[in-house]
Image (cartoon, rainbow, N blue to C red; front, side, top):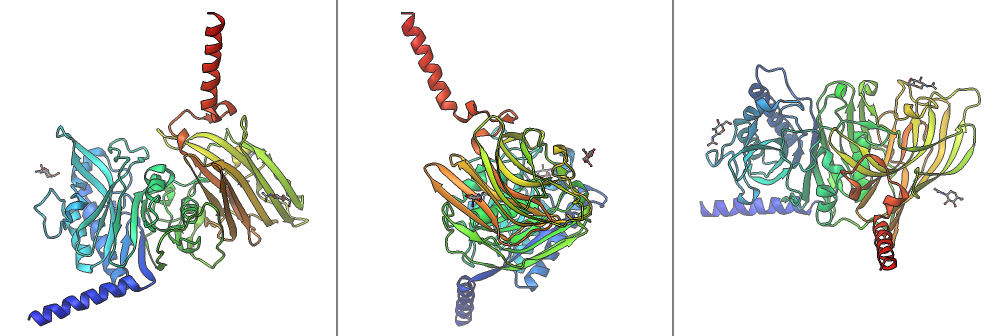
Length: 521
Ligand SMILES: *[C@@H]1O[C@H](CO)[C@@H](O)[C@H](O)[C@H]1NC(C)=O
Ligand SMILES: *[C@@H]1O[C@H](CO)[C@@H](O)[C@H](O)[C@H]1NC(C)=O
Ligand SMILES: *[C@@H]1O[C@H](CO)[C@@H](O)[C@H](O)[C@H]1NC(C)=O
C-alpha cells in the first residue's frame, strides 16, 4: 500500500514537472450568452453554473489547464439589487486555501458557488469565474462586490479580485485600490486577474504589471464597444501588445447591447484567436499559449507581429457599436485623391501633436463610401454616467461622410475604392502616470496585426509610433490610445496649455503674490 501511495505521489510529481517543463500551456476562454429565461434569478444562475461545469468538462477533454469565464455570465448584466441575495455568495479569503466543494459549511456559500468549485475539482482544472460576492462591513452592513474568483485543481479559492473600476454599477462596492490579485499555477505560469473597465486604469492593470513575473492575465469582461478607439477587441489587442503579456479574454455576449468579443492574445502582439458575433451565441476558444519567463521591458523597442490569426466573425453588421463623443477632438480631413500625405494635427489649446505619413491608392472611377480624418486629442472625456478619464489620442479614423460627428460610424459595407498602401502615426507623450497602446480596427471588427509598433523613451518622454507592414483596405481606426491617469475624474475638457503645467502656474502665482507683498511693504 505504502509503495503504491509513494509511486502515485511520484507519478503526480512527475506529471507536475512535465506540465511545468513544457513551453506552452493550453488555455480556454468562453464567450458566453447567459441563460436568462428561467423561472427565477436563482433558477437562471443554477442553469448558467451547470453550463459552466459542462464547459469545464468539455475543456478538460481537450487538454485545457485553465479556463476563463466572462463578467456577468452567471447573472446577466442588469440583474437588480433586489435579486442580489439570491445570486450572490460569500467567497473565502484566498490565503485560507479553502475549497468550497469540500468545506461547504465554512462560510455562507451558495449552491452555484459550491458547484463551480466542485467542477474545477472534478476536472482538475484551473478556473476563473466572475460573480457577485456578498460581504459585510465592519458595522455588519451587507455589501456586494463584482468579484473574480480563481479556483485551483482542488477547487480551492486561490485568488479573489474585487473590481475597482465599476462601470455604472451603483449597487456594488468599489474594491480596494491596493489589492494585487495574482495566482501561481502548477504549470509554472503566474497570472493576474481583473475585470472589464479595469483594463483602462492604473489600478489594477498597470500596477499589477509592475511585477515582471506576472506574465499572463485572466480577464473577464462585459464590454460596451465604442468607436473609433474603444472597440472590445481593439482594446484587448492593444493592451497585450503594449504590455507584452499573454491576455486570456472571456467576454459576455449580448451583441444588440454592444457586448461581445473574446480572444487569446499573445505577448509578442500575435493574436492566437478572437471571436465576435452579431447574434447571441456562446463559443469556447482553446489555444496553446507560449510560456514567458519574464516580461520584457518594452519602453525602447520595435515589434512587428505579422501572422495569420484565427478569426471567427459572424454577421458583424449586427454587432452594435456606438460612436464616442468626439466634439472636443481636433480633426483634419484626408484628401483621398492625394497619393502621399504628410501632416501634423495638434489638439486644440495645447502642445500635444500627432504626425502622420500616409500613402494612398484610390481607384479612379469609384467614389469611396467613407471619409477619413486625422485626429488628435489631449483632454478629459466622459466614459460612463459617472466616470471621466484623461486621454491623449492620435488616429486615422473612418467617418461616414465629411461631417466630424459621423466619425466612428459604420456603414453596412466595407470601404470601397481606396487602399492605404502605408500609414505611419506618431505621438510624443509625457510618461508620468501614463500608458499608451495601439488602437487598430478593421471593418470586420478585428484589430490589425500588420504593423510595426515602436517606443522610444527618454527624459520622461515617450515617442510611440505605428507603421503598417502591408496595405490596408478596410480600416476603421489606426492610431494610439494614451491614458493620462493623473487627469482621471476631473471635468470634461480639452486640457489647455495652462493645465499641462499646473505646477508652474502655482509657481508664477506664488511669485506674483510675493512680489505684490514686497512692493506693498
Ligand atoms: C446565508 O445566506 C442566506 C441567503 O442569502 C441568508 O438567508 C442567511 O441569513 C445567511 N446566513 C448567515 C449565517 O449569514
Ligand atoms: C514622415 O516622413 C518624414 C520624411 O521621410 C519623416 O521625417 C517623418 O519622421 C515621418 N513621420 C512619421 C509619423 O512617420
Ligand atoms: C453624414 O452622415 C450622417 C449619418 O449618416 C447624416 O446624418 C448627415 O446628414 C451626413 N452629413 C452630410 C454632410 O452628408
